[in-house]
Image (cartoon, rainbow, N blue to C red):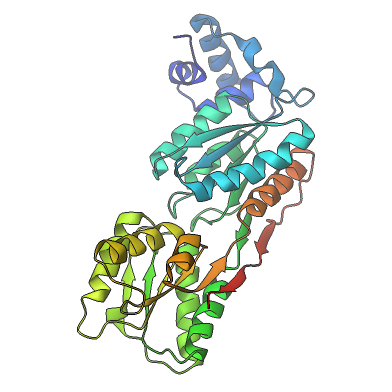
Length: 329
């Protein structure tokens, strides 16, 4: 295996971002630091010419995408939107999987710096985001997609999660339901918090008292949807309707109902954030909130390219896309 930027950074006692900035002859680096890095490059035999494309006059025309899960259809549909937009401008895409780990996000950021990408689109795995300063320090623009971090700001493309959830719960209430459970995601994630806020907003508007027994938190994965639906069905007075905050927990909930032979006429109705056509076909669905998933990706790519092409406005560009309410009758 050849010498990498990480090897050079270790020898010089600096970050990979600093190595990148020195090799790209960027300003703002102390002379002593620059000399240490160049000496490490010389001693290690690192091939500096692999960085030539990253110079301002000769970009790599490559974008990185940092995703919590590459096996997740939702995230890959975002990637499809990114790629569809980028290919029109001659850019290619490198997709990095982080296994929902902030530590892996840092490693992937270092890799993308080493690969000399022109920009990065990030779907954060957790609420933490300060490690993405590595990209900013390296002069690489980035855009958050689908979620925000709590401790680090940047450009972002999101959907109006709170409004979508509010509209769905409001519709259920207007149909005569008041005993509505909520299966949400981890409060670490901004979209999970926003969808829960929409649920509470609807209850408050219609003066329905919050019942803590009916509010359960999962992890946006199939297994938690299965487990939490089992918990709700097992209550002495199970809910009339269950609103589920994402696609995969919805899949898990349906899996539980089918596995236990609970037909739609004897099980709770299901509302959900994200579409699940199978639920509608089987008769469980009542209402769903559809997201413009590929558009999240294409708009994130559009903002990123504007930054790459010289947009240095200091204000963060935050775009929230509209959701659509879909009724199953």
